[in-house]
Each structure stands twice: as structure tokens, then as C-alpha cells.
Amino acid sequence: SNKIVIAIDGYSGCGKSSTAKAVAAALGYGYIDTGAMYRSVTLYFKEHNIKLTDPKAVKAALKEINISFVYNDKSGLNETFLNSKNVEKEIRKMYISEGVSEVAVIAEVRKAMVDQQRKMGKKKGVVMDGRDIASVVFPNAELKVFMTADVRIRAERRQKELFDQKQLVNLEDIIDNLKKRDRIDTSRAESPLTQVEDAMEVDTSFMNFDEQVNVIVEAAQKLI
Ligand code: C5P
Image (cartoon, rainbow, N blue to C red):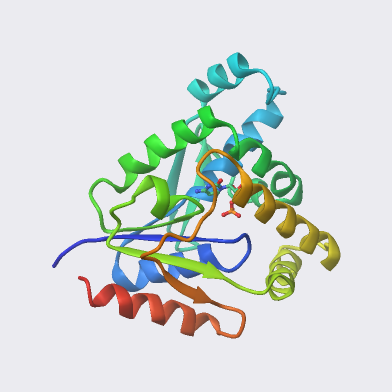
């Protein structure tokens, strides 16, 4: 069969990564969470006190950063490794969510991540989620999906997810964080979040999880 690249872009917290993961599993495809890559860079910068306004320090740090995804048999999920350390849990914390969009605006950071993402998707048979996948990373992706959802609904889902990880976070704080990230992501000069013309829009506000997975899997199966 014909292997394709599936690009999933959209706003923060509308279920892109869980949907992308399930789509990949249904098709037997690989899954690449590009947000996890920007989150890992953010963690590294914080751990090493890299000043975002110091281009030399940023460039040198990027050379030291190696990000990979390793399949965990036990959880059945891909986990993010930063320089051979499992950072999957750490990068989901609020302090990383608070800082990541400021890191993701840096052109050198984006260049380094996009290079890696293109290598990871070269053989096709992948689902990649992020903000600039259809517009920049894989403009020739065979299937492009743009996900949206009402911001309050997104925040409620996010709050439940954090609660399940034993993190109690105020709903209004999550709404503020989502809005702030959406604003930075859509207005930045360097590859802003945008819905490309040939993307299929999936608004998940009133869809359940299976519905949002199925609509993408069905669109993919027509192309495979
Ligand atoms: O997808 P996730 O919410 O984990 O992404 C975290 C942040 O990383 C986003 O808010 C955005 O600032 C940045 N990002 C990006 N480009 C991508 C993926 C994520 O700028 N392809």
C-alpha cells in the first residue's frame, strides 16, 4: 500500500496529540509529537539557564540537544527522551507550558527542530502533529488536518488530564495559558500557526474522541 504523511496542526489543547496517536495506531503508522520537541528544548534551556536573548548561547545549546522518541512496551506509548533521559512527564508540567511558546519563536530553534522532523518523516507512514507541519515541515503531506475547539472546552479537557496526573490547576489559569499560546503561536513572524488552504478542518468542540479519530482515519484510508 501507499504510505503517506499525515500533518495535524491546530490550536493548543484541542486533542491533537491524543488524536494523532490513535490515528497512527489505527493505521500502523509512526507518531511524532513535535510539541514535545519544543517542550524538551524549553526544559533544557531552563535546566542550563540559557538566556533566550543570547543567540550564541542558544545556538551552542541546540548542538547539545538530542531528542528522540522511544516506544515503551508497558504503556504502549512513545516517550520523549532528551539526551537519553526520559522527560515525558516533566515536559507536560505547567511551568514548561508557560515558557514553551517563547522558545518556539526563536528562528534557530525552529530550524533545528524542522530539520529533525523532516528526517523523521522521510520514509512516510507517519502522523506528525504541531503548528507548522502542513505549512512548513511537510507542505506536500498527502493529508492535512487543522484541529480547533472552543477554548473553554479545551481548558476543561486539559484540566481533567492534569487532574488525572495529580496536578490541580485552576480552570481560568488554563484558559489564560491556552489563549496566550494561541496568540503567540498565530502571531509570530517565524512559521506562525495557520490553516493552509487544502487542510481538512476538524472542530472537536462537540465531537467525542472516537469521532475525531475516525474522521481522520477515514480520510487517510481513501488515500492509502
Ligand atoms: O503541541 P504542544 O501544545 O505540546 O506544543 C507546545 C508549544 O510548542 C506550542 O504552544 C507552540 O508554541 C510550540 N510548537 C510549535 N510548533 C510545533 C509544535 C509546537 O511552535 N510544530
